[in-house]
Amino acid sequence: MSEPIIHLAILDDHQIVIDGLKLLLQAAPELNIDAEANSAEEMLEQLKTKKIDVILTDITMPHGMNGYDFSLKIKQEMPEIKILALSMSEE
Image (cartoon, rainbow, N blue to C red; front, side, top):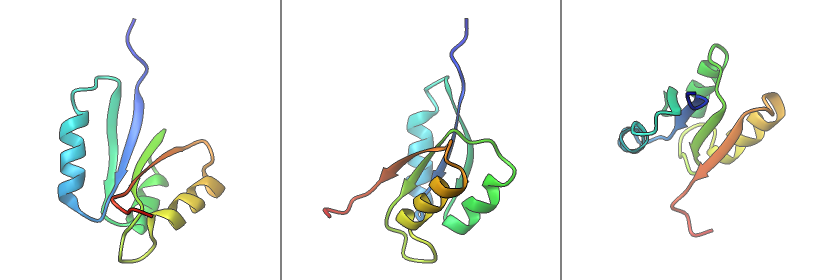
């Protein structure tokens, strides 16, 4: 019996962070990375056409919508999606 597939999206304003996370997570056969974006607005567009179970999002994004506001919007509009927040902030 195969493991259930988790459809994952990664949102971070630094592509190198996305690439690093993808490299780390590719070894997990139960994960499919189905979307990635460098801005909240870009991710919102992708979520219109992709089924995502979990979003890994940066909290601090200096341009456009930040990760906190993005997470609030997702919880209001797509409450079935789980959100994991990434941050280097000490707050």
